[in-house]
Image (cartoon, rainbow, N blue to C red; front, top):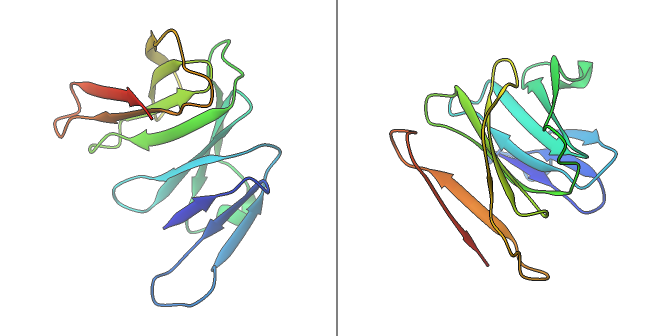
Length: 136
């Protein structure tokens, strides 16, 4: 599994080991997610999504794409079950649906007003055709 931290690190973990198996230092508070096959992971911060090959993450991202004009802090990022789309929420109250291969914006939804200190969460339905969201 992956963890993203306020100290601007991403840690890669193996449940069979008692310590992290990999470390990435990034330039912002990261939101992170593996694809369902565990081959690729996404790291979102600072208005960009960076795509990494899990087997050679230390070489850096193999793709970087912009999240339009939304440079606010990322809350969470998730892959659809088929791995073709990414779902990203931000502190600005936006839900972005992106093509995970090319980074094209497929849809953006604005959830306004965003309550101070709340976190916008969203998930794909199992078939990937719908999104459910809420604030906590």
